[in-house]
Length: 354
Image (cartoon, rainbow, N blue to C red):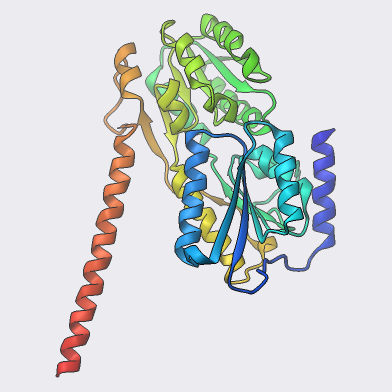
């Protein structure tokens, strides 16, 4: 019923307007951005930080104010937060995670909404004909990794396994989408798959225990409830010697052995670039397609792999080392830019002297 109501709301939004939905600050120079983040955990925190850093860099610290609020994992609180943003007439809303996006979509058809850390917008918003562009006042970035490649990763590391447990929160529509897709891919590879759904963190422990008892390997998608409770999963699966393949780096660092992951900070940066286009350049959000992470990295949890006696192929990067490599590459790029600027200045000085 909730999904149907949301779909109706979105249909109304899109029917209203072939007109452009853009943002404009009161004086044209300063902006207020409301940030609704579903819950605090590594991936979502990184996406929010990347967004804020990029927007601040492009607009200037004095030109933007962030009203950042965390819903503590409660979708109803997301709605309350969004309503406060609407009452305060913010210039743009960042909805970090699917329930935050759903609340924002239901809360306003006028204020531009950018989602991030959302796996599949068509599923999240109940759109049967989603073609990559939501329309209306919504766009954003998706954290969907290549699910068939995640299944292939599981097969690469555990070719002799037979039973795979699919662990996810039934309250998260995008989690259901991921496990359905991975299940189909794994069954084509010859695995027997079983769903292990929990409704919230209260029944997570009992469901994980059941899954660990019946599975050779467990797969966990990019699931916000799991991300906030990786210690529970690790405390059950590690003693049971059951490896966990995960949908993203943050979960893997807490309870997994390997993942095909994106950089959530970079995803936030990409979302920030979209915000600047809307706020500063006046771009029409209704025509902006959802953007996806450009790069994926095979990563592994060194400590858990060592404890379970798992040896990963050479093309896997230890979690932590991938971040170091990214930072080093960024530093090298900055240094190259500075060197190029200095060379250009020197050339200009010499030309002036001549």
